[in-house]
Image (cartoon, rainbow, N blue to C red):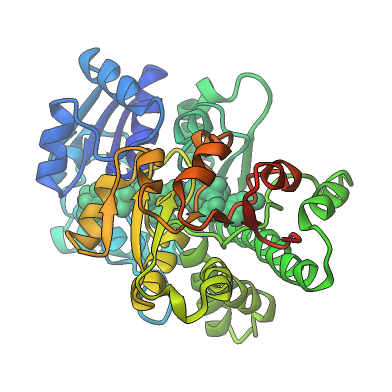
Length: 442
Ligand SMILES: NC(=O)c1ccc[n+]([C@@H]2O[C@H](COP(=O)([O-])OP(=O)(O)OC[C@H]3O[C@@H](n4cnc5c(N)ncnc54)[C@H](O)[C@@H]3O)[C@@H](O)[C@H]2O)c1
Ligand SMILES: O=c1ccn([C@@H]2O[C@H](COP(=O)(O)OP(=O)(O)O[C@H]3O[C@H](CO)[C@@H](O)[C@H](O)[C@H]3O)[C@@H](O)[C@H]2O)c(=O)[nH]1
């Protein structure tokens, strides 16, 4: 099938490459000419495990193409995916300018029947607005009779495992009121629907809300556990033992109940706030969602509070080694990363940072530029040199079994502030290290 994907970010590029891998003929369109040129030369705009090989192999095989020419994109695909960003507005609502710009481009160039698919995370009612924007352009061109359908098909991939998540989706949510569009979507996703039925077809508005419901439920689990971690901390209980104790109940489960220093990334914070705005606009008071957001904002400061609790006024002039900059492992993405709150709080308190991250160093340099109080180090061991203490903000695998002897011998003040509860309390104590983590004695 001929497919066009508008927007080659985390969602668009991965989705396009995975569809091409299954045999579809996919054209990717992006307004960022530089990104398009680099992709043609095999250079990825993001770090995502397995993506480079997948993109380049399918590009070389002639199933995956890149262009900045939007009109060519509209003409190419029978199915047109909209996978552009929906960043937050000042008041938290989703900014739809990129989505609606693509819709207008489609309406301005469409010359045959199309299925337009919204992959971006968009508030309930957006597919109606996409339809309206396309119709307005068709009417303006005097070709209002061209048939098209607008489908909601939210994406559930996680950064860091985007390729396998897309290759083997646990569900394919399709919101449509058209039998014809459903048939096209079934054919499109047939290669991903062989093992068992994964397609869940529903009305458009329910599909749009399903995406927010999923992210907000997961964010709620995390904020709940973070609140419990703070309670455990005050009561002398160990949240990690509590986590295992409740996770063993299959009604609760082990997933997404890891306490830490808050959820980050380009999705949970923005989507919780967007649903809060949607609820408010619909005259519903979203009390739980507001609490989830507030707990998360507070949680992002907990590691800094532990550091201040230890050093007090002496923190000014100290150097902290920081392991982990990205908002989660296996990505270079630092959008809304808890590490950023820690970095900025430490600088504000007059401390310097020696940081290491396996993949987010370039991103960090782009965000903060050259500063006297930030040294980006080539290894995690190098970050320890000349540092007074170690802080951990991201649970990269390579941080899980470090040399505790080296940490003890290198740090001026042998203490670890762990925002991801990576280590066994007894192990760290055996190596003579002080250890402060989230919701555990120490
Ligand atoms: N990142 C994730 O893990 C993830 C997962 C599921 C859903 N989502 C949702 O998917 C959407 C896209 O997210 P992302 O992280 O891939 O965004 P992104 O910022 O990584 O990429 C968006 C791309 O769209 C391009 N673009 C903007 N306007 C365009 C236009 N008119 N025509 C063509 N290209 C255009 C931008 O240049 C950019 O390359 C958002 O709504 C997001 O909430 C994201
Ligand atoms: O038990 C947990 C699990 C996650 N996190 C944090 O939560 C954030 C988000 O993690 P994750 O959900 O794994 O990554 P995302 O790539 O943001 O993926 C989420 O957001 C995407 C964009 O909407 C959705 O498609 C995915 O289904 C949804 O999991 C990260 O900061 C994690 O550190 C925790 O603190 N504790």
